[in-house]
Length: 496
Image (tube, rainbow, N blue to C red; front, side):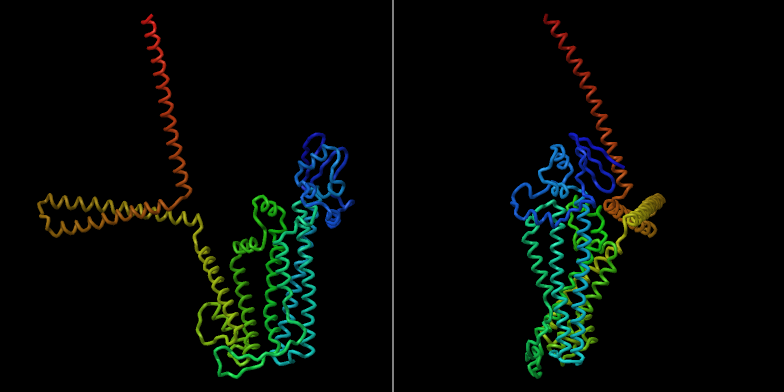
């Protein structure tokens, strides 16, 4: 299906795949025969002034038609291709695919580095070699190589992100796409990803467990490597980025368009909320297992490095301590002996409190009734309350009639039968009032389809009655005005 729009000698033809602008037998659209590299556009405009109007390319089709009406474009052939919507959509798709590939490489390099670090640390814990041996140095060298490659890939990711921003905003200069926040994020990410144990032996350190002065001091080999090994787990933030770029929310162009029109940023937070809405149990389960495993291993690493003789140097004891801390139980049978272990325990406790709160919120939402279920339940409850009110009202009439008949028979007020029926009358009256109050409260707190329809009907009837009254008043005022005019004419005739 094609749509033709005529505007000052220009024809705009759009189909379901790509837009096409026709002007004097010229088609300034992006095609495979004449590709346009975004990097060439970036490098040709580095010397332009940032504040000049030519730095920002008009992005709507009206501006393209205006350029066509003028006969020639002031931006040249490259500017036409860059301003064309078909070129920008195709270039955006290619950049998103490239960005997805780079993120996959980032996550792979980060996980490889962490895996090699864990293997090296476990071999050292099992006394297969010392920390300054040649195999250990080779494994640390492999971690360093993967870290260098990871830093290069991170820079590539931000470069592609800058190009993607230029295409989306229609910018010609890369300096307009780079802000202080952009540079700050890049520096923070480089700082996080460059943390890893160095392939050199720093030295030893003599430590004593805190608050245990009677225990003999021990020697910690290369304490900096132990700290850097634990801090390498900060690279796992890349998993959130992996979830974003592989989410259907980012791939679907319709969702991106809706997000842009609604001013909603499609980021990791948006994807996390979407996953929590669709499959909260799976997301919370993965987070809990990840925190438990990472906390257990880091607790064991801290205790083994800093306090080899502690009770939590084995993986089973570390897992028990992590579970007790994560669930905020605090039995006290095991406690971390090192300062590093205490820091890990604090982090585990905070994560446990947050995840427990999320679990409670998800459970409360799952147990909450849906709107149809709530409406049916409220409707049945109101029916029972109305029936209870009617039964209590009938009991009131029945007991009052029985008391009247007994009094008419001449029995005194202190008679046992009259007192019995009076007590029943009081109980029935209390039940009737209670049922009426509860029914009114339920009716006020319930807004269903029937209530809305009744309210609309009442408002309609009220408005209709007001209009009828206004019409009657208008008719009376008109007749009164006619009579006044007649009286006025009669008075003028009498005066003359």
